[in-house]
Image (cartoon, rainbow, N blue to C red; front, side, top):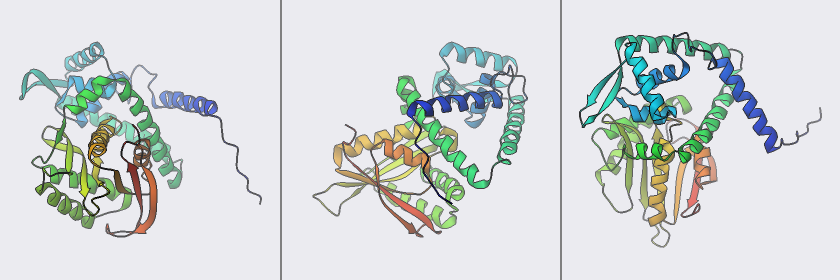
Length: 329
């Protein structure tokens, strides 16, 4: 059998196809209906219930940023959900002028119903795909969602400001356990890592945190309600005084925040730091983490090495990326 390469599609054709797929997704997932996910709520209200359930104590302005609502739309949605007995407000302990949002017992019950509906919907669709195609679909949608989110964040300064309010620099009580837990859960699913990997993350991060603050070393955390939900660190390399080299480490974002712009904002802060103090930055990651690779490459990193490794407790294809300081300036 003869094999040949299909001609590449034009960018205009790709755009038209993505728009067509996006419209089909909107229709098939039910967003054109008056109610969504076997509930009595409109799609926007359903998404509000989901986000409040994922992050109890969420403030209204953060909900607006996440769902791309304006202030008036947010107020209307919350007023309706409160009147239905699904959402309640509590005055923030750190700011008496603001309130935090929580689901009521009825709201939690409704969220469970929505989750079951959505899980069944996705599960039924995945049964029609072979496992390899399922993973390709997840990686492709992750890349697409991240690209859309990047554009939206760049157009919405309020989103960046809201994220920055929750980014803290340096060690925070409980952060070592939080970050190790995030790594363990994510890489258990992504690469089959177990206790060896979780112990290694916790031990090395604890050693790193004990020397903070220290020249050339920095740690940033995205913190909500006292929990670290995302992190990134820069660790100085001191072997060569003539070439200032930085190691980017412990970059992780909780699943509930993916697509929110938090990861991109943390990376931006870290790269601003290294551009002031270092000549070059490197990081190690694993093959097939396509969404992460897209983020790194869009920030100026280039793949320089790829090899099989087992230092994390199981065999994986490790990848090294390098970025010269000021590459995007």
